[in-house]
Amino acid sequence: MISTFDLTMIKAILPEIFLVLLGIIIVIVDLTTKEEQKGVLGWISAAGLFFIIIISLLFALPGDQSISTWGGMIRYDWLSFVFMILFLFGAGITSLLAMDIPNLGRRGELYLLLLASTLGMCLMASSADLVMLYLAIETTSIPMYILAGFMTQEKKSTEAGFKYLLFGALTSAILLYGFSLIYGFTGTTNIYSLAEGFSKYTNSLPIIGAFLLVLVGFGFKVAVFPFHFWAPDVYEGAPTPITGFLSTASKAAGFAVLIRFLIIVYPEYTQLWSALLAALAVATMTLGNLMALTQKNMKRMLAYSSIAHAGYITIGVVAASQEGFSAVIFYLIAYLLTNLAVFGAVSVISRTTGSDEISSYAGLSRRAPGISLVLLVGLLSLAGMPPLGGFIAKFLIFASAVNAGMIWLAVIGVLNSIIGLYYYLIVLKVIYLYRSDDENSPLPIPKAYVLALFILTFGIILVGTIFAPWFSWVTQAAAAMF
Image: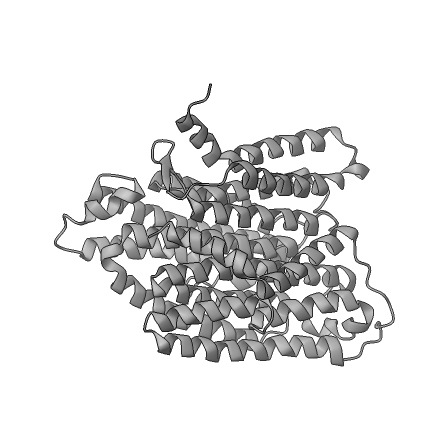
């Protein structure tokens, strides 16, 4: 009979166990299925990931108290659970969006790499030890490097994969050096014991130095200034569904780690890191929005938009409160739904037109009213317009800054949101007002895209109108840090 302690250990990693099993199933099906039937791999991957979500909700819900398990390597709490559901959902939708793309959707290794990266993200959110955290980050990153350069026949994709690998390896080395310094100062790798280890030092300079090195690694993951430089080229060159996954789930994993690390490891330095992150938030959202204004390529525009959104999310981290962290998690949920919907629509359009230029969207409202509606809902949600999920997310973020006494930061955020609204409306103007010679040619939309985009669009509206259940979840997740 399994003891309560052993059962808790299994529940803590139940999603990860099922991810490994799903990976094995993908390999077996890929090896035993004929080439013309390999489209089923996407359906198996998506169905498997949504099945894992259901199993997790039924059997792996954490209790009210956070629990350290697996020798202190894993933290089993609501924060890790909510993020884990987010990663699984993002991977499931990405599987649906990738399955009909030529030279991509019928390759079993695509789904295997996607599952491996998702496994790493789940472990990132629940890591309670520096060694486990670093291994989880690498498990997340290495498959993403490969996925970014997966379309080897396309120069932009190869370039994206190489740049992502090069910059990622550099920042990973800096992060590891920071971890090694922290271990040297404290004599432990357990994240929940580090603050006690720091307390014996009267000179805080070495501790701050190690923190800055760690911040470089985390800053790269979430693409905040000045660690954002890789995003535009990688987002443009990577396969569009992978770009959507990278811009949402990977960013969420970075913020999950950042939240836990800052509040648990550096509680005595809250004023310092809050001021530093406030400056980075202002620089990030301002640079992202101003650069997005000048873009003619849709994916590059969304890349700079993603950088700007990293700045908005950082405002919630700066608040350093339960309210701020709740806003961060809610924002990441709304952002994942929205950005995946937008990139899904972009993928459909680029397949038909062969272009990601914004000018190629002319006449789209007549060619594909459904896709145009998805972009309308998605872009207005990114801009923070009611009654969509992005509006509630931005409201919660700015409210947390105001309640933390940082009204100036909230004002800068609102001004940046106005800039963002301008370039989102430019795209919608091209879609609905501009004419095209091809506007009478219908845009073919695969069934998998219809399903994925319907779920995402419905989710954006649902999160924006009936937000109480989701906010209750994220409040419970944020409470795990306090």
